[in-house]
Image (cartoon, rainbow, N blue to C red; front, side, top):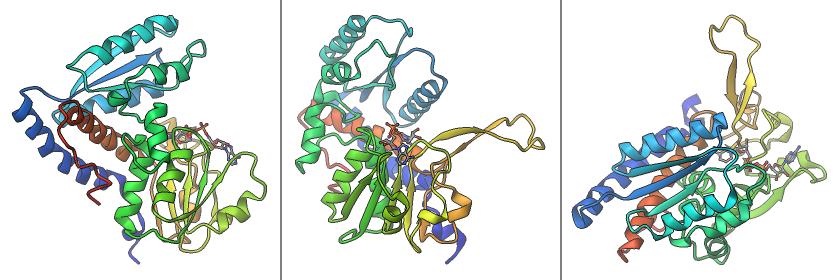
Length: 305
Ligand code: NAD
């Protein structure tokens, strides 16, 4: 196998998805004389969140999607934030609402998510959308697991019977990922920080999804030969290589890419794997929200696969 055939290139998958989305946004503008609009709410000045929001807005602008950036200081009162969400819910020109997580400690994430109108919940975290996903009739699917699932289905159209192990049980990644894989007839295990014999569990995986937040924790000991690896982790680590100028830190995943590369069948790199797909799926969900707002049917990417 060529080295490149092993790499699941998230950038290419994302570009292909965006190519499908773009003409739909053109149709929307022709039909309704306005652009689909995404409101992005950013609280505080966490550098990672600022970068994520910036990238989401750049991609929206490139894809005919209007973006509305609303910023609050870290000290904003919870009720002020909730009032803003209600205002966005009631604004007919806003189709999708995203509140960038994590939130400052004094604000209830649960309350914020529950306040977003489920029909504008492009992140798919509202209990209605979350419940629909687990009931097998998904409406808005959280963008990161949707992006992982999209790449997997493109690489292996039939996932039936595969042993899938997800490391991480977060609401944002691990749990919805499990639901998607289950719906594709995988046998699914969710492992987490209290799992006993994590290595043995992972070694049984035909498909291993790492969503841990621990830089390069997964090495060759965890991998079954010819497994497919989706590395969701984004971790910034200090670089010790002083020969690299102006480059004090670098991004790595939860998987030690170099150590597992020869064993795996396919793997997503970090950066350039899951990250670009997450943003492409946000564009997909925003367009979907805009069409649904007009009671106009929208064929979502999973139905068209
Ligand atoms: P989280 O902190 O909410 O969850 C981490 C999970 O990992 C937990 O369920 C925990 O039980 C498990 N875990 C922690 N230590 C473990 C250990 N030693 N062994 C086994 N399991 C362990 O994190 P999250 O929000 O799910 O994100 C996970 C990673 O994915 C982070 O690096 C995050 O930055 C990244 N992420 C990337 C994207 C993207 O677009 N690429 C999106 C969301 C999250």
